[in-house]
Structure formats: structure tokens, C-alpha cells
Length: 352
Image (cartoon, rainbow, N blue to C red; front, side):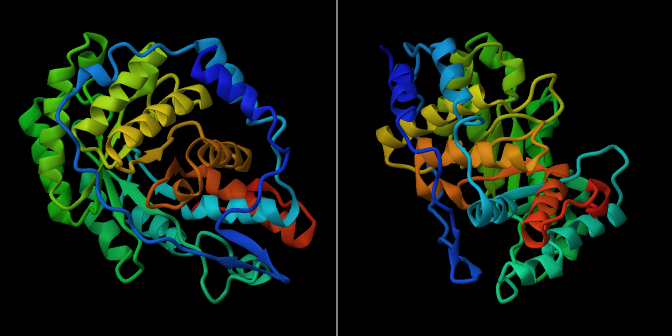
């Protein structure tokens, strides 16, 4: 029996409900708790012996992931607590070809107040209203986003390195990182060269990500693996390990542009790599699923996965982000139902 099968059996013994996260019931209100930032991942030398012999049992991984959306449920005030926590972990994103400074400004306003004020008041959160984890845009939209978010404490994340394909020459990819940082981006979401994974060129992958980390300076680096292009879970695990060795502060599933984006089996595989890296180095690295996450139910499934696989510290935005846009409207709708007992039309909850 491999480790994944053991985890599947152990998970089947857990209770059907899970306690609330950072937002927990206290009397008639909900209280928001916060955690401090963690130290950056310094990386290590490339050590292929840490991942070359790893095997991933696909059927066992799918069985383990399949337990998350069915048996595990949170209800009533606990569900509201989890959903508020999900909002705090969202990287509110616009990555469209017709993005404008005006659209980014509207997105920033929604980032500052992601939940309607009457709902926030009914939840008892008016003294510390939740905000999203970050706003994610293209490099040319960083400056408008920084201006619109001034004083909010919400960081601006920028995609870079030839997003989404990552196939422009390395000097251009590094220059794009520096441009975004100069414009005020505090986080950089880079894309890896998938060919280096498919050809097992681990030295090349490591060297490129390391150079990208250096180009980021003080900005945090999230490495997008584009897992839908990597073909196997073994490749996903190996690419995750190499990205962390090269100094990635987060590993991220997808660009949102692949045919297959974030899935629970892929996320489980990446979290096992993240956990193994932590055991080997003592470093805490963040995780970001992105692409295809659209509903409150999706948010609950990924929060449950984080809690069960990595524990309480990975339920804060300094170690967990969700790349999403339309998901926020559905979460707000579910929170309104909790407060009023009535469902509104989804169109009632505009993104921005």
C-alpha cells in the first residue's frame, strides 16, 4: 500500500464536518483572525534525488481527491466562515485582451469591498471588513492597479515571462519581470517552459526559474506549472519540486488558458510535493490553484484539501491563494442566502 492509498483510508475515518477556519462563530457575530507573513523560500541546490524515483498512483490519487466534494460538508455559520476565508484568499484576476485602466479600477474597487456592505454588517464584520488576497493583472495594467489600490494594503500581482505560453526568449521574459516590479507589482506569476518538463531538462528549468527569482527582487514569485500541459502526475510532482528548489514562494497550477486547468488530483499531487519539500528543508511554500474555479462549492473543496493535507497555516493568504474572478460573485450570493434565507439571481452580484 503506497502513501496515497494510506491517506485515502485515513481520510475516510475523519468526521463529515470540519471546524470553521479563521472566521469562526463568536456569539451572534463572526470574528476575523489573521496570521503574520511567513519568510520567503530561499530555495536549495538542484537535487534530482529528491524526486527522480517518485511514483504517483493515479487511481489512489483520484480516490483521495474524490472524497473532498462528497462526504465532507460544512453548513450554516461554519460554511459562511469558510466562504469569508475563501474571499480573503482570492487573487481577483482580469487577464483579457481588452483590459483597460477603467476595468482595472473597477476591479480594484471590488477588491477593496468584495462583499456587499449590508452582508458584511449582518455577518458582524463591519469593524474589519474582508478584502481579497491580491489583484492580478497584465504588466501594462500594474500601474493603474497600484494607483487604484493605494492605501488598501492589497498587493498587486502581475503575470509575466511570456504569459501564458512562456516561450519568448529568456532575456525578454526577465525584462518583463523587471518592468512589472518597477511598475509596483509586489507579486509575479511566472510561467515555466513546459518543454523543459516534458524533456526532463531539470537543469534548464531550475536555472530559468532561479534567474526569474533573482529578477523579482523583493517581489514574491509564483511559479505557474500549467499542469494541463505536463501530461502526467509524476511530471507535476517533479516540476513542483524543481520550482521550489529554485526559490519559488508559491507553486500554481495553471494559467487558466490550458484545456485542463486546476483539478483536485493535480492539486493533491502538488501539495504532497510541497509537504515533502517542507519536510526536507523546513521551508513553507504557498499554493495557488487557478483556472476553472467558479463556484463557492469549488472554494470549499480546495479549502478542505488545504486543511487536511497541510494544516491550519495554509488557510491564510500568505500561503494559499485562489486565482478567480467569477467565483467571488457566487460566494457573495451564498453569503446573502446565509444572511437572508433567500437566493438572489447570480446576475445580482456583479464582479466589478
